[in-house]
Amino acid sequence: MQKILEKLKYTIYTVQAAVSLILILMMIIILTPIVLLLTYTIDKNKILYLFFTRLFIRFFFLLNFIDLKKLVDLNKLAPPQPGQRRIYVLNHASLVDGLLLFLL
Image 1 (cartoon, one colour):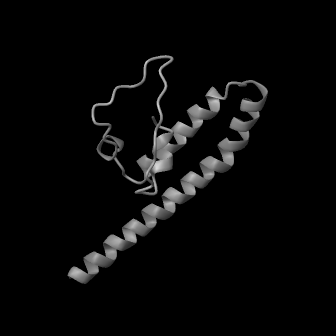
Image 2: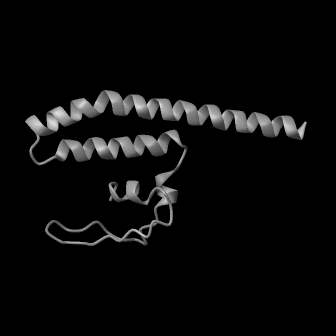
């Protein structure tokens, strides 16, 4: 019985990963040309591009059942004030470091 439940668990994870991948690829294929067209014609400051990048990353974490509030510990670090500069250093301890940088 334990082996059957274990196989069922892995099957569910495999299906969930396949569905996540399909949704992410569909989003990339459909939204990327639209965002690039709008960015290069209307949005010269690339604010729209940053918005869609953040939206995509949040969607990626949502599909993989990752809670960003539990994943990111900013040690009570407040957002920078307007005009204040900061340097963020990634240690690449995980594969999501680069994605998380866009959410800061």
